[in-house]
Length: 355
Image 1: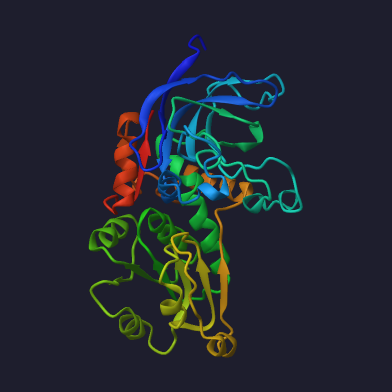
Image 2 (image 1 turned 135 degrees about the vertical axis):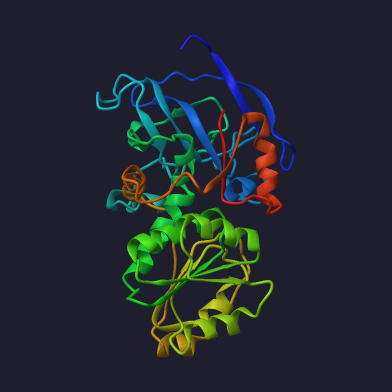
């Protein structure tokens, strides 16, 4: 590359508009790879970082900071130790859930729960820039064969997170069982697709507080029953739908003010998967019913690097619609607008910045 600087959208203060400025282009050495960013997705985690609520946990490590952990692009330079299989011009998705040192979890393949996370856009600078330096080629997921490179950026978080959650629930779901997806935002648009793919015989109940969100996801993948939690008594409505059987699986993409309500609606030998990071309040579940009905309640956090490869393969084979969840494509100067849209619940599906 001839230029030593490139454009970036910086977060210089918490809760302030992002500022366009020049970033120094870092050239790769050894195991590093430089990519030209094709797409950088906007996630609720970006909103949390922008608001400063994760500052005590080292997110971000410093200001100014560049947001976005959902990054796709094309290889433009590589270090001397990068293998020949990674070629200049290769299409890639960056695995976001990176780590500083191998530990008990990473060596077992549980890269999503590494003890020393180093996540672009969260701890360190992310994808709201024209070029992004990947610290090690092992974080590159082959995206060759993908037609719409910007649209796969959200698969590194939204698409990955829901995939792992649905996989956890899959073994519980039998023909004609009822599965509830709580929250039909950007994550919900992927979750419903994965349930249709992995358990096509299930009855999906889509739950949200906005009719427009329900309609948006319904156009991407079929929902058998929809419930607006603001307009109806959720418990009564779901009991009408499921009868005495209850919910066999709950994929909770909200995680705030939901556990008590929906855990009481679970049937026997059922599973509740908490995905959403919206809540920090304590919620209660009934221990007696949990034991008598043999319910399972578990968390699910993003996904492993192996699962990220699986998600990309599903997209490459046309088994999931990765384009339709992307409702809006923005340029760098509009990144602040995208953050505010998400904070104020004005965004449908996923938004992607194209630097």
